Image 1 (tube, rainbow, N blue to C red):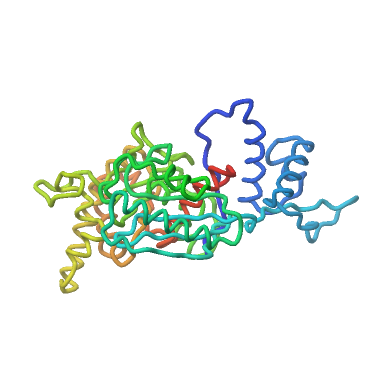
Image 2 (image 1 turned 60 degrees about the vertical axis):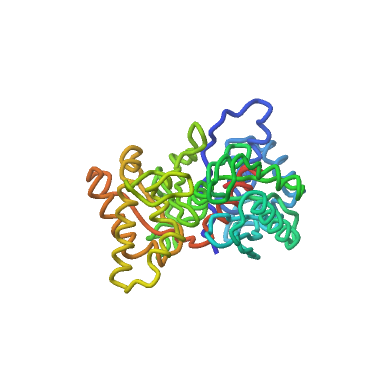
Length: 389
């Protein structure tokens, strides 16, 4: 089960006058979602909205089933009528999430609005690319939509490759997609809102909303003092990074921020699906790494993993130093990314960045494990449809 829903994403666009009601509604929902049950007076204080506005918005949310009255706060002694607590209702709707990053299958899930995974399904990739891959993804989404026991709020997808703000996969060489309008394809087929993002960006959103540091994971606490600059590296069929700075997702001018999998780290190097050779992805993706490890005795396996970790550290160090990041999170198979690879990456990074950066930097495996992209895809829907994260 994921951690308690956390911080809101920082808005990246100006709120226009006609959007004020939608924005105010999202403020109330976000407060209930991240901070738990509150009275109407509490909500007025934390959102700086008037009691009249809060009353109207809460009534609207209760009518829609997104909020519920929970009775009075226990253990309070006050003069007059006790305040009634209002809470977010995670069972009001379901979300369908898809993770297209694994090397041998597409994976999906039905989640409630708190990020609890209720049902999972997967279909083999079987080498499918192009339209055949899009058809397999559509059928998986259709199956999950039919399994949902509540109205489906939307469908979220974490896809490898460069994804624009319309949900079009501009380029995903491993899937044979170039200009694939995935959001449009799924929306037309399933008649639901669809939100598509790069898989690494989805993983970054998952860490932001549901992730926990090593200390938090060990103690079960939520300190809410996480780094303001976070890079989440996804290792699956490909290799990519999602970057959050001060609560805002970094996308780049061509929506390709974090596409480090195709940085050339070896010359000459092995041929890559992008048409070049020596890419980081050729050393680090799950398929290629497992191929290199197959049949090797353990000492040689550890050496291969350490070499991959060193190459990763060399690629990441300039990004970490340029942006002064505070946290790097690796998500993918722990048997590959932990141990020798993670240790080598830490060493390579700290050797190459300023001590003031390296000493405070946390470099760890994700505590969300294989569910990272599924959870991040759910955040896409929560943020896009309800304005919460």
